[in-house]
Image 1: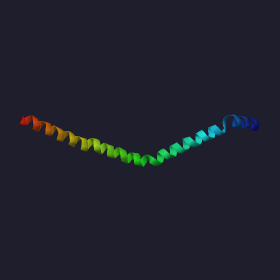
Image 2 (image 1 turned 60 degrees about the vertical axis):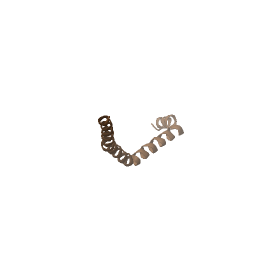
Image 3 (image 1 turned 120 degrees about the vertical axis):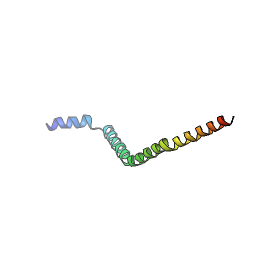
Image 4 (image 1 turned 135 degrees about the vertical axis):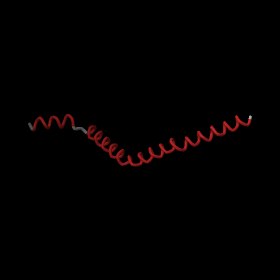
Length: 71
């Protein structure tokens, strides 16, 4: 059994695999640590899309109607 485990360790646990696992773990930790910022950015983006753009559209429509009416 011990011989079998050594064979598996020598075959599958290499420096490349260890580096890959380390990078994957670092990416996951980095993404989890930045997720609160992403939540805030999504809320800001929703606010801009919902309110600011609707007011800009309303203002542009008002200007166009005003120019059409005065022609």
